[in-house]
Length: 175
Image 1 (cartoon, rainbow, N blue to C red):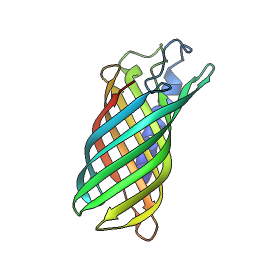
Image 2: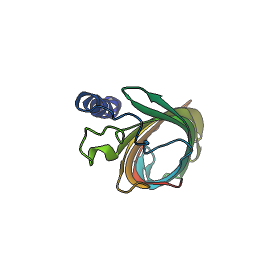
Image 3: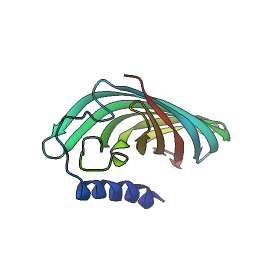
């Protein structure tokens, strides 16, 4: 499962490099500097079903000439699970790669934005633990501010083992 979770975004990323050439910096990425992005959705995880929410602040853009801008942020995520009552909390550094600046792509493909995150997580409730976490997700912007998204959140709780959750939801760019 972990290999598939990593393989699909990697293949999409490689496909984006193979078939697109960036237009430069004329178009800002979806996750542009100083943006505040909130998200919410339904999830399924190691504890059953639940709801999740989060917020992210994009604090820097690194524009790689002849490639694409990468944006860096800090995010917080929280989720509540049922029937096993567990609250997952996480804080992470994020990296975004979007296709918005690739003018040679069809417009519907330029609406994609990928992110990866690394940080620390904790769970409280029926189970208690803390440890490192990794996250990855993809968003499709249906308007300049609203996106549908799919995320995978994988913490390693010391003493409990690996937890996971997959979330389908929405993202809203506030700024």
